[in-house]
Image (cartoon, rainbow, N blue to C red; front, top):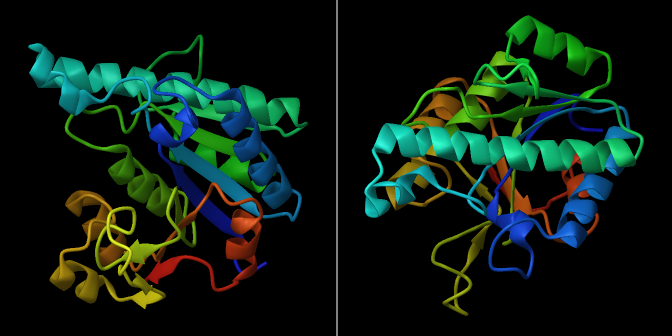
Length: 234
């Protein structure tokens, strides 16, 4: 394998599958199978998953909810998804640990960097829920920060498109996919890869990002093998 330790970032919306909200059992099982196959290669896997299929903090203000309160609601939504993914992985026979940015001892361990690294070294799949525990930070920022803290070699951002394009490929047939990009080029072109905080963290710490289609079976395996899948930003 090209990498020894990775951080996989999944969106909450991806768990909806063909549904309008919530968690699609088939999509959840598909993701668990992909992660299982990757884990069986011996690679160490950390995961951050969003909560947009249940609740997004930025929606709170539209509903008259205080932004900080709304962000905490969003953090709890990520924990629901993380718990579902943990259960799906354990049904596949994987050893897992769920670590939370919020203190919620009955559900998850509180995040401690050295403990997280030790879990990874023991071959456990570590899922980070509840963001970093603070409002105004997205799960993209959580993924970048946790990847740096656990000394992961790359952030793999699993999406429903097969990389980064110069325009929205779902709306424009003429969209062109980039195979590689520098951080500087991505910023100059104004490409929406991650929010600025997350992107800057990766840039300053020389942490590469690969954006790829997680919904295509076998793609995760190809990425960790070093195959030319998706878009590499470095």
